Length: 280
Length: 280
Image (cartoon, rainbow over all chains, first blue to last red; front, side, top):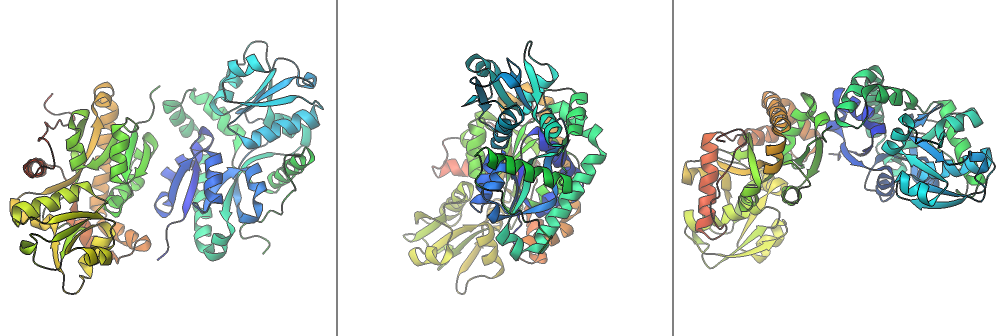
């Protein structure tokens, strides 16, 4: 008798389409123990061995990559604008040297992405300060603010007057020509080695959920609008921008992101990335 | 925009049929925030206002009944044997006066049920000691042991040699002629008053899940056996014993249980029980 694998789930709007697919298609929810939490907590839990599979921030994965193998067909990613990761600035980004940038304390991967774009794309050297995601407070104390999630979507649809708004997914792709990968589905290596069939079953079920959600984005947008703060057409636009892809170009985007993180001193080295079922 | 109601779920085998019904039928899992925990923790969470609806132990409900209204068509109950709540004794129950009974520290309702049966049905006055659910340790330190859940099911199917085994559901019904109610689905009164349509929707969806699970007990027993320690036919037998009924005879059983709890000093008074949608 084996225990059900414990599968993490990100309890944010970005993973709502996937959850919708899980509920509506197949039996995934019967064959795993679904554990909902925010990405940082999921990263801690799987690192401690309290989960077998979980979506975790790209940068947190990279810091402990030797512990994990990645599911081959799923990530949280964008190829162009992402809408939910924004830098709002009182001055053009190119003029932020010597000024202060407030980074929301809710996302490590986006913090590093912001630093990469500021330092490498825009060539500026600001001072960084970490703050809770409260835009008025951030722009009172700083010249620019990184927002993610609902706060970012609100600013995307109704940009604050006079602010320069940068969609960091769009900026990344414009700069690199590559997609950006925000989170990956990590599997503990020892579990993948011991229970490859269970991991395959989870991977297949997640792919089934993704197929379902890609075919029902209108329904999912209507559903999101019932319970969440924005209109259905906004969610439809967001769900088109936010991808769950991890194909070769996306993997190249992840490697480039990690290399840039190393270049600015936010990561020690680009790790070897092992993919479940590939190259072994 | 309203928030999804937060619905507690008991993460034990006794509620697995209900969860199976939730996954397989309807959209309940999209329209609530499902929070899985053990019954005692669910009782604490709903009392603190961190859940709107939750299954909680009958005795915990009774201690704070003025905070709640109950869903009308669902409870965890039995009408005769229950299989998963057992008293194992080295001597006949009638001979336990002056001896020690070890009560598992994992169930308040069953502890009180055990005391009622010992003191009122069997007329004995033992000494009670609370212990973790480890049968050998319990029977080393005491003359009888209350077990619930998997530990009880194991003893039900393979009774330890020389032990007198009492199924407390069966004993209750034999003594009172009534069913026993172990847990009820409580709704915070303020929420039921403010959001009756949301409560109705949850109640209907739970009833739909129950209908599905009652029609698929063979499938659910097979499913349980895939992940849990016992064979499918044992689960089928257990799921037939364990009911989700809260019809008038069951409600009468609950009131009788609470009255007996008062009689032995384990509850201050039998509360008025308010049922959602009835008598208002």
